[in-house]
Image (tube, rainbow, N blue to C red; front, side, top):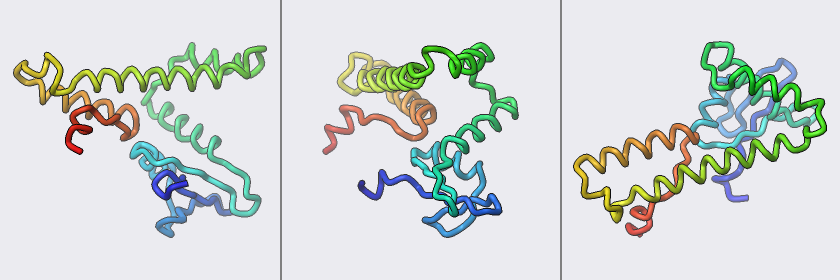
Amino acid sequence: MPESRKPLLIKRYASRRLYNTETSDYVTLDDIAAFIRQGRDVQIVDLKSGDDLTRQYLLQIIAEHESRGETMLPVDVLTDLVRSYTSQAAHLVPQFLAASFEMWREGQAKMMEQMTKASPMAKLPGFEALRAQQEAWFRAMTGGFAPKSRDDEDKK
């Protein structure tokens, strides 16, 4: 795996402190959330047992955001998730959620692709500012990942 795609390894010590193995310092959940928003994958493992704790900590980050009033998940969605753990469709929910997010990312990528300089809209005043704003919004929504536009490809 190339170094750039290798997950950032965080080790959890018995004291529950989290240690960033790349920078050799301790980190908080907020630090980990920032790494993820910057587009970095993380893997959190228990130092003693080697157990992968990534899911547990990602859920904790989400719970902390929700408890601070930064709500993104409607109550009915949370309720359906709780119900799905005991339903016949429990094995389908992860696939459905992953496919839904992938479709959303693809839709945003297509929209960005259509907002190139070759677009008829490019002749409108303020188009570049609109395109830059849309790209910034997309980067924020996808944690720093934005698809390359045709304009970027043309520069190569």
